[in-house]
View 1 (cartoon, one colour):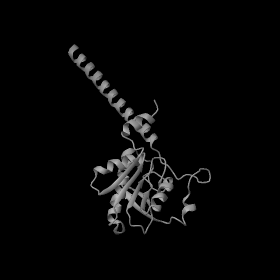
View 2: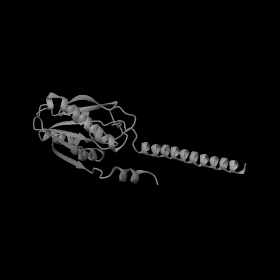
View 3: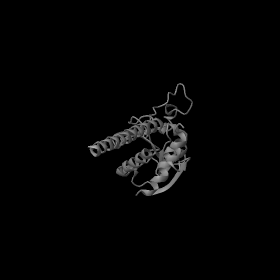
View 4: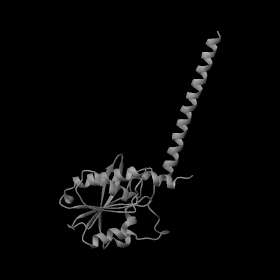
Length: 206
């Protein structure tokens, strides 16, 4: 009788510990997910009436662009093609987090002035593209891959050498995409992160 009682007690203690560990693990994952998602919210287009910066409507006459869209996962991304008749090469611009393609109008117009065609796009969860959040560093690479996959399917780009220009979030994507099976003629990454985890830990609250 004593042994049965002792065995039952051990079983209850064991189940209680296992339950506690399971509950702690679930709560920890939920907390981590909440903190992580908080670092990568959606960023809508800035209100140009209260923020400084170039506005495309002021440049439209000199720098006409064509609107395109393509899928990245379940989201449809908004793309923009500048320098429509230029054949020197195609510069693909991957923007930083918190902005969108229009945040880089000064860079885009410079490239166009130098004779390049430019393909820029709003990444997932940014400006004119779909997505409830920007999701994190891996999404920047997924979106750039989706953009280049789209470019591959378009006859108008088929004879153009492709160059990548990425800043910060987009810089991380531009550097890492060089491991993929694309013929990239050149790449420039500005302030691209070496380690996404270091960036996340730096930005997360202590």
